[in-house]
Image 1: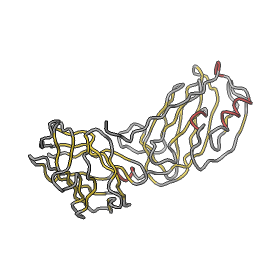
Image 2 (image 1 turned 90 degrees about the horizontal axis):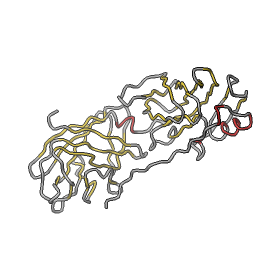
Image 3 (image 1 turned 180 degrees about the horizontal axis):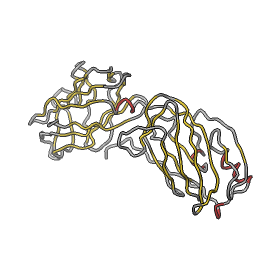
Image 4 (image 1 turned 180 degrees about the vertical axis):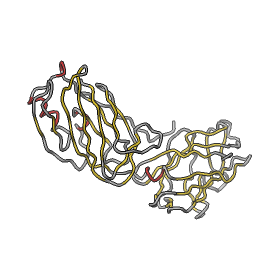
Length: 293
């Protein structure tokens, strides 16, 4: 068994009976994890107002009526969860942060979307660190049931810059060697400290050392990065301590996988690779390397 670094998180839903919340219950839910949050008197809700700011996510944050995680943890994709029994129409607004709600790398601000009871939505962010105003209009069978407004500080992960890295294949060889380059087209540098192989075409089982050569090398600096066998689909492997890769803006860096192998251990010619990369803040993404592009 080969260890991976994937983590799963369980989410706890807090529901209300019949869609109504008493003043005491509403205060307990709202102040349990939401920041700068107000619930206005409409429909079944009692009038209440709470003010509280957090510098970091708290354990009970996902249990609030409008649960939020990952806004200030770069390694976690931001997620909003509707923990109420009402439908929510959610809007995100910010002077510094833009949002990709549908995962198609189209970033906009403001953005709006609906959340059914118990539904969650993840999204990507870009821009600069800053506050985001999150509002939710609650409804019950088409009738207004309340409103929530909160302000949260969002931290832009390095993965936002990673998405602007252009990957290109320099050469693929019959013995399994695979050369590629990464160019940072963002405005800020990014440091990479982990790599993995999500998928290959044709299918390879692993990439490993050949003789005294490393599994993965930074050819631009002639530096060994990983010297252990990397199995395809295993997510991410740490680079050798002290050999992290700094990608300066608009400067290409050359890399080489020493040898892709099939299940029998023989070298295999690989054309296409989905390369997993991790930044030193824990954020990560997948870069597509295609031989014919």
